[in-house]
Image 1 (tube, rainbow, N blue to C red):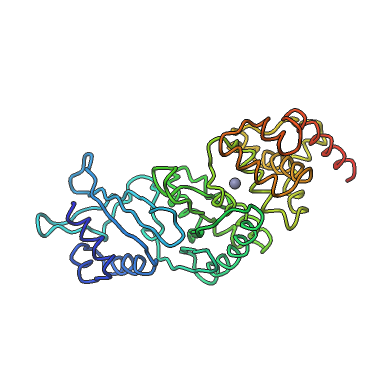
Image 2: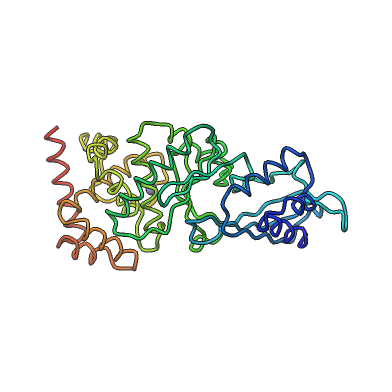
Length: 352
Ligand SMILES: [Zn+2]
C-alpha cells in the first residue's frame, strides 16, 4: 500500500494526471471528480501514508494529510480504500469505494467541491449556486469584526460548507445524525485536537437563513477559531458567552432575543443564579445555557471594557483562577459577580 499512497500524493502535488491514473482505477466520473476536487482546493500540502489494515487485506487504510492556506496545520483523515489487482497491477479503487464507518471524511471525498475566497477566509463548498460566495463575503465581514473586538491575530479562517446536513454529519464523523441539526461547529480536523487545524463546518440550511443570523453565527464560530477554543482552563460558559458577546456586539437586541428561553425561566423564578456548567451546553436545555452565558458576559462587559474582558479571557486560558481573574476584571469574585448579574437581570425583566 505504501507505494500507492506515495504515488497518489506525488501525482497530486505535481499536478500529474497521468500518474494519478496509474494509481487509481474505477468509474471515469468518480476519478474525474476526485482529481478535479483535489486540483481545485489550492492545496499548500498533500501527503498520504498507508497504515496497517486490521482485518481486510483488500482495503488500504490511508492517512491523508492536507492543508490549505489559512490552516495552522494539515487536516488529517483516515480513509479505507478498496484495492484492485495485485503486485505491480494493484490500484486504489474509487469505483467501489467503501465508506467504512461514519468518518470523519474530507468534503472532497464526498461530493464535488469548489473554493470561494474573500479577505482572510476560504470556503470549501459542496453547496451549489451562489451560497458559497455569500458565505465567504459574510465571513470576511465577521472576521474583521471579530479581530477588531478580540484583539486577536488571524492567520486565516477555513470553512467547509457541505451541500446537505447529512453530509455535515459525515464531515464531522457523527453516525447518530445529530450534528446536522446545529447551525455550525468549530472543530479540530484531525485526531490530535491541540495540533489539528480548527475548521468551521457549516450547516447549509443555517447559512441560507437571513443575513443577520448568518453574520452572528459566523462571527461566533470565527471567535472560537481566533481564541483557538476549546482551551484548557476556560469553562464552556466563558468560551460560549464570549463568542456570543462578540457575535452580538453590533446588535445586542439580537442577543436579548436569543436569550429569551433563559429570560422566560427567570421570570418564572426557575433559573439558577450561577453560570451554567459544561454539561448544560450538551443537553436539551442548551439555549438556556447560551442565554445565561451571554448575559453574564454582557454584564461583565458593561462593567468594564473590551480590553479588560479580552484580558480576562486570555488570563483564564493561561490558567488563572476564576475568582482572581474576575477580581482583576471588575473588582468582584464569582459570588459578587453572580449577585450583580442577577440584580441587573431582574431590573431588565421588570422593564419589559
Ligand atoms: Zn460556540
